[in-house]
Length: 413
Image (tube, rainbow, N blue to C red; front, side, top):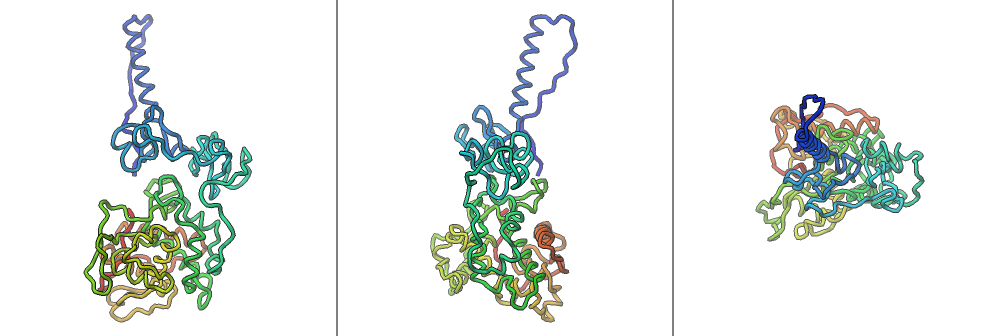
């Protein structure tokens, strides 16, 4: 995605004069003022400029430029989006009582958290090199929930994915531009994993297999919730978990006629949570799972209201075989043995089969696909961070989709 400003710079060529007339001097003054105005309007703002707001109450566009057009004040606008209404206030530094940023982020001179040069460079107030010494001591807690001790539950997952690594893998999920900021927490992830002890569990699995399962789960769910783009700060694969609900408007209903899982009138079963759980035939059985026990057919919004529930629905889908599909857990841990029909369809063990399980009817068997590559990109980054190899058969380019169409959902973007 290319960042651009709708206000082009004013470029003037002026002939040199020994003694400009009064009229010429006036013209020069007007041109200089126009140039200054154009340059001022092209200045950076928002997350791209350390949280700076625009002068003259202008809107700050999603790309970090000031203006008053629909492109500035519409979708993705970062601050002053109604032409004067304040955006999110400062969250750190002298503007916020000396608070520091969570996740070792830098505090910009304007009092906003981030990891760009505008946050960590000139004027940075604290944590300018991560969590090392800062120019200004700031003992107050940062915004959002303060990290606490590891909660009880699936300590096995915590042993291979400690809190600091979780924060680094999902680096930008709490960015001001991410609608799901402060929703997906490490504690919520561990609490949900405790309800599914076989997930990345030690029993029957070596550490390499356990780490690969965590990388695969985070890789698939990061794609489903990605807020990244090609030129995103820290790369496109640092922006997982940016969304908690599907972004399509108006929100789709996703109701399939079913006697077993009847849709509730007025309810919509669009993508929610890390896996973007979709359709009544997924909300119904997920809610009845012993680890969840909630009426999600009548209350689908619970998936986007409670982070533990959100993670539980994603793990339920991950751990549960459906129809002729194996579970993603069985695939990544090597417990799934493909049938002759699977092999004939090109469905062989590897990360690619998991993509087929989740969204094969849309993404698989059609040759190279950018969505599939995005899933692989996240997975590789997480495997590298966990120190584990990727395995083989990462894509599903030549795999026929599983015959029964039960997708988990669609990516948030």
